Image (cartoon, rainbow, N blue to C red; front, side):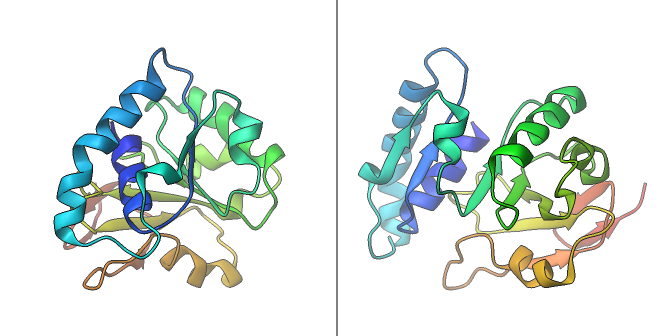
Amino acid sequence: MIGASWSALYLAKGLQVVATDPAPNAEAALRKFVETAWPALKRLGLSPGASESNLTFTADLAQALAGADLVQENGPERIDFKQKLYGQLDELLPSDVIIASSSSGLTMSEIQKGAASHPERCVIGHPFNPPHLIPLVEIVGGPRPRKRQSGARTNFTPRSDNGRCASTRKCRAMSPTGCRRR
């Protein structure tokens, strides 16, 4: 349900969210999660324009990506799945749209091999859980991010008044206090 938590956060920050998931009953589960999370988000403070009604769901990937400014990917932790999906995303999205993965067990170096045309726009955007309640995300790029996107990587997530976002070097383990090597 990491994707549902991200969706709730983005909605609370006043963003339009278009979600897609091929799983049976995915839309109902997502809407139920957002509905359940909304009271806590209200207590934390909603941004102007925040609304549960800003959520759209479609089973069609191309339709979900149309007009996207950011893609937060939350698929299964399988490298074959992610590389195939990143190939589709790379083909369907404009080159300046950042693709962030919530992956915690795979490196962006491996995932972005699926995005042959624009691998530099792919980052790990791994949240501390649940993201709608804990405004902390670790961002890890792949082997050769573009300089012009360095700033974009640190600004791709909605910020809370006290939230911070920092870019880190490539690593295998994530920690709130920094990057640890294994």
